[in-house]
Length: 506
Ligand code: DTR
Ligand code: ZN
Ligand code: ZN
Image 1 (tube, helix red, strand yellow):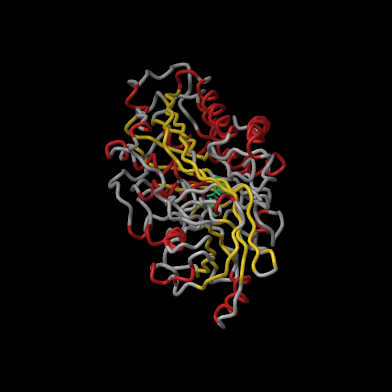
Image 2 (image 1 turned 45 degrees about the horizontal axis):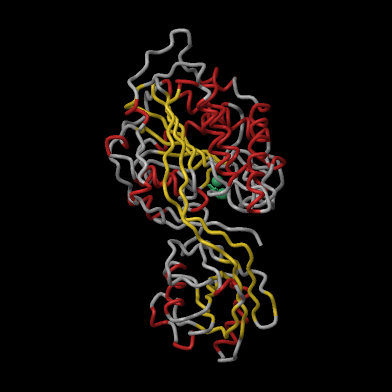
């Protein structure tokens, strides 16, 4: 069983005294330095010309070696938050920027996060071992980390009220329908009524890979179960036939401190910043070389090459932690940004998964109708660039699956590009981008095989050049780009965003 680590919305608790490590915004630290007259003013094509596949891949090899530091604890390479692989990644990013001297002001922004590991799990229903049962993120273990045996007890409605749980659930295993309220609420109710474990079954045929969210002392060991497997069980329970089960989860949930790394150019107008980010962490299951080693390395390389130029506007790079646990680092950053700092960020650009092996050139479909004004201008910059290169592109929903979410909710224009995760390439996309229709864009998404062999160098180089173009353009000028107005999200986005990172929580 792989090791899972998850964190819910709002599981980051700001304000614990010991954890209040103040972040000085880079622009608060130093006065503007005089431009270095020997350097040319930033120019997009000159910056793009400095991007090299060899340099990207050399860094990927380094990152994979760093992920191996996670082997002692996890038995395989990983860069999940709290692991030695993630600490190594942070040190690598920090040192790399530090080596660039005073071109950048560098900050660590620490924040508390909950990290959950599932070491082993099994669910046996009747006489068969369940194929689809997946322990929920942040689930506690079964009692004493031992198997528990009991009858499955059907819960009324969707288990969102304590009264939905019959008394007979005590000492048994609650069988609860997905929907209406978060998984964490259902698990909590099961625990309050004395259940020894809970199963949340899907109303669709697929499996349920969810998270319990903010830990509660009332949570019990909880699995998600596919609708397909739940069907026959449900039929029996509805006929009042007895179905017994054995549930077993060996897991732990701990609170850790992790950190974002922020680097801002010392030069450039500090009241007008272009910001871009990638996430420094991987999931526990693997080393995350494409997700999001690729974006993290692209940013490092662009930051390195940018030092050869003067900039007119400030450029702020971020490497977020805890993206895989629910966008923790980026949420924390935006939530703790004072209003007068928020307004200085002209836009945020998200770079998550730049090199999927069966890639498509995807642009987040961020429009000004739904997102802060300027998001669409950024989208159009990506479109124009792919068109200029004679490359095809597709739009993907801008629905909260990566670190742009906090920025959009904070009224900051945003967008980004990606190359695809667990989605399936269409026939049309095969014609547009090559690769193989009918297969995932990244067949190693969130798995151990997201290693050095899982990056497509063509896509990676193309997209790193596009990142360079986005930085080069806005570092030089915001001419024609809308001015910032409010720091409040539009309600249109709030109703369209269905995700918060990669995990379902309802
Ligand atoms: N949140 C990412 C993957 C990701 C980002 N955008 C999309 C859109 C569609 C599918 C996946 C993603 C992750 O880090 O897993
Ligand atoms: Zn991911
Ligand atoms: Zn990612």
